[in-house]
Length: 416
View 1 (cartoon, helix red, strand yellow):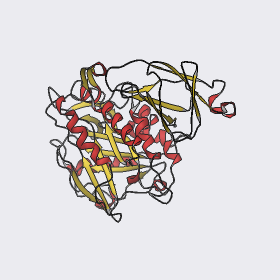
View 2 (tube, rainbow, N blue to C red; view 1 turned 180 degrees about the horizontal axis):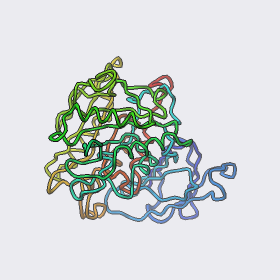
View 3 (tube, rainbow, N blue to C red; view 1 turned 90 degrees about the horizontal axis):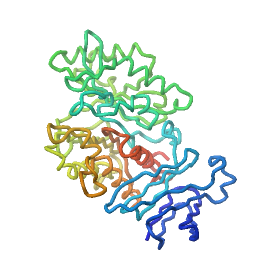
View 4 (tube, rainbow, N blue to C red; view 1 turned 90 degrees about the vertical axis):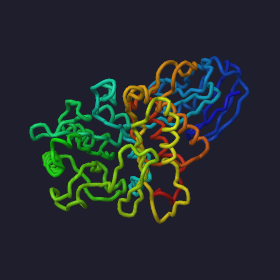
């Protein structure tokens, strides 16, 4: 038996073993009595009218047997307008529309607040060096690629080196000057294809012992002023239309704001507290928005991956007994790092061969399966999600996070 979920607006004709044909209407789910091995061919009905498919109208996916539940994004030709996932011993096939990750926010109304979005992000965005404990992103995914791949929340950690800010992770240098980071973001936000996007930029100081908070704060302001990049510096959560083509600053650095024109009200979204590695998460307020944050990174070992996932993902669900007069923003970090049994890469990706029962499944594939299960059960997921090694597994996680922005939307709610 195969459970087929069509989350697109297309009618899809499925052909199994060349002689079983099933038509799936848009937004439908069906249980089909067929083997879960072999090849399935998918084609859109009346596809000859669809320019997206060019000359190819049929796409094949192979379904090999896996003895354990797994998440897999199936590779399809570039011309295909779908993304296809299989999971649960491949007895489920889920078809989603293929969105342009470089400009997905352009599909969302201006009136939607940033707290009503699900924004993919990277933890320690510029940490490409220092394996095994300091590296958090792959060298194959520099900042420009991250932005093109749908990352909209970037976590910039900086230190003062001879009066200029440079990317660091703790005491480990990450080699990229802050000005180069700003230039890359400016290039992305001024491109004709992505000028309607926005980027949330969290900035955190890494050299507390060497640079006073007031000096670091001043250096951030000075380097921002040197850049042509436009920043939203108000201490509130804006609507999307207010910040298209701009960077929303999330200031995770100290000081009293005297170095900025409007003090603490002009230093961007400014957390009132940020406890270190709080297991249960914590809450702070940004004007009328309640901000729920989960950043438990100092897990003892990889054995705590299931517990970390369970605690963090609860923040993506609507808060229990939430008063609609108090909007909520959730920020979660799926990252973890402690030596020697919880290095960032194995925590994010897992290790061994978990789909064959020989290894440990990481946070990223577990999060992907959790999201798929919630989409199938019509849950509304919102928040900002910062991950390590975001392009694993199989470039499938960010696509699912992006798709959550288009599920469970109702006219007249959340700015739609």
